[in-house]
Length: 244
Image 1 (cartoon, rainbow, N blue to C red):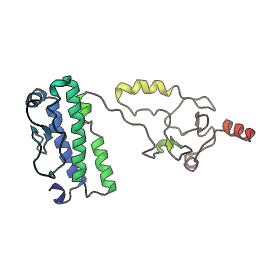
Image 2: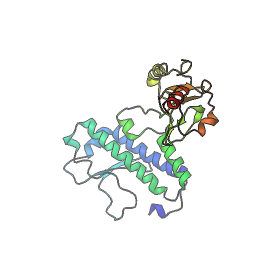
Image 3: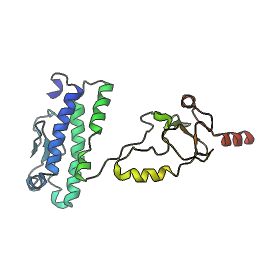
């Protein structure tokens, strides 16, 4: 069994993942006609394998139970003639992405938490097979609650303790979306001075009115924002005091 062999490093597993991914991408792109031809619906359940040698193979699933490695989707050939060709290839691509991830984390069973996170980050930096096959460009994420990041002083915490990301950040998307990002940025104005959003300045958002403010305009520093669970801008604080 692969898992029982000498413990693998993150780099070893990523190399294995990359090679298998390369093989599958080739099957679904440059070798797509050959791949399409061998996926005969009249044959038994077929699977698409990507091997560490960067060679792809369409064959029957492993007979051993449990298998040496997680198995890819079974019977990909059955749906070939019942679907649009592009849709079918996209479906195979999605299942292949799932299989590649499962194999990588199977081989990384002995990795610790930080190593697993690093492995996933390395994998996530590559386009998925689905993105390659559909020619869809991946878009980089904005800072999110999951990351817990307050980089560039651009996030605040809401009443539920989660981190809210700032207005659109510049340079965080691919070229085909940069112009759209710039247009969206001009729409974000400071609720105090009316100035435009600048990624180099610290901003904080109000949990009540949801307006954004320069930290300097409301006298909130990045360090102070870290300890604020629910921020209320000066206007909302005054309104709340009057209501009380």
